[in-house]
Length: 88
Image (tube, rainbow, N blue to C red; front, side, top):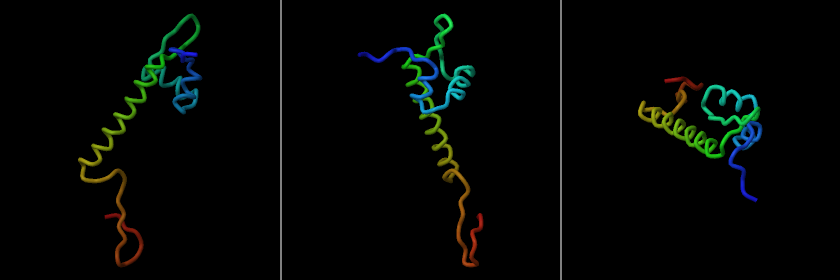
């Protein structure tokens, strides 16, 4: 049996590993594009794939921005001779 081209929001949430509330919020914000057929709200499978690619690109951009700043993300801690962790 072929995969459905349109999936209900609840099923899309499960496929994405997100909660239903978060998925509905992403749809309302326009980050996930939906199709309405009558009273049903559906998300095309290709839209789910596009959304995941967008998240990957955002994560890669954030990673690169952190590297361009000369630091990895987050504060760096160094242990000094005097003991204890001090932020430098």
